[in-house]
Image 1 (tube, rainbow over the protein chains, first blue to last red):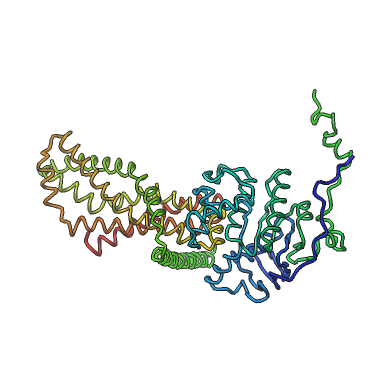
Image 2 (cartoon, one colour; image 1 turned 90 degrees about the vertical axis):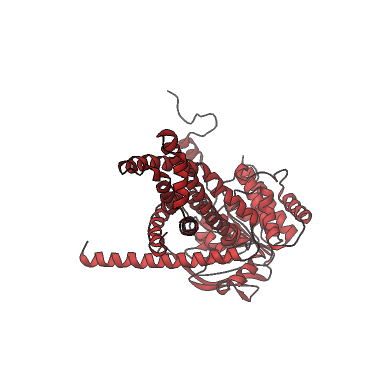
Length: 280
Length: 260
């Protein structure tokens, strides 16, 4: 008998006003068109998940919003006005002060301790005293559930801790926008659930617009208020369950649960009691 | 390949080389600008001077001593043929101060610290650490590149000086202690032959120029590395090759132009 899923998908909240909007993005890399007039929007204060198959352009879209790469054509608007793709370097730096980003592999500076990593943005941009910085670092460590890690180097952490430390650094300057690139990749199922809980908690506490890229269907359905599905360089978007149960066969196929019959199991020699390899 | 294809390939290579040179110039100007802007990252600079300079001490001192010993031996045998073995101090000193000290130090430091510097920055590119800094509105040129490049510029003349001193000591050990030359003559001919403004200052200038070269080439190759593991190794290798060849070419021009 199948057990009930621990984390049921939710219908998705009603989308709020648009915070970030991509219009007609074109991007070609190495002769391959990644975006062909992609348009999509991300509601303010909600969790939006960008889903796509591997190589579908999830990270590229996130990096465009972060101004780390520029599209060949098209524009990205923030609050309906600021056009990211045409910003000067100074404006980009100012915009990034409002954005936190969790990179897929953490992107923590490997020669600095975790405390120094998380404190770095405050040391660079604020005039806070060391005591105040310490208090802020403690606040974000508490928020992501990290304890006694101040003196550890990133190389000494597990995958889940790296993600949490990266998230702590992304949150230290209280961003309006939080970008998370594949936060569940490379994690075991219990850690995936912990990171999911953490992102939900952070969204409740901070209220930032969160854009998460993932090809993890279970996590996507659990977290997303708004789903943006990238398909062949274009986007389909809407409330998650409406899209998953909708008429676009490509979306339905992407979120289809893999079915495993007893015949499959037997073919793999994994039915309980049967050894995987028949002993001689 | 057809003649047209060969000309086309040569043209493509030339355009690529000129473009790369242009990017390198813009990069160098940006590093200089980043080093000029506050905040002064003294702690990072000191840490980089330790990595580049202090950790290169052993290899530079041992090499300097070995080169001095070879010069002592060769110089003594050659000068003895003309009855001029008393001039050994001058020969060893001038060869080291004017030429061998700065050039060999530059080659050694490019191999040890330059390649490590390029590989470290390239690894930061691969692991998105530089993008992480950009997302914190911290300029990687200012935070990572400038302290490394300036550490190289500061370290190179000092390491070159140590190379020369250990070389002179090596020459003394072989020429005087082992082969029985006159120690007083070794030191006095050295003192008479070497002029501060022409020889010592020239050697220091060469050391400084080579420091600029190796520092900028290493950081540029790391900063522009392809974000793959092959890109990291390519950055390290090309740093050693380009920095070494550039050192030898620039050495000729400094010598020809300023007579040092």
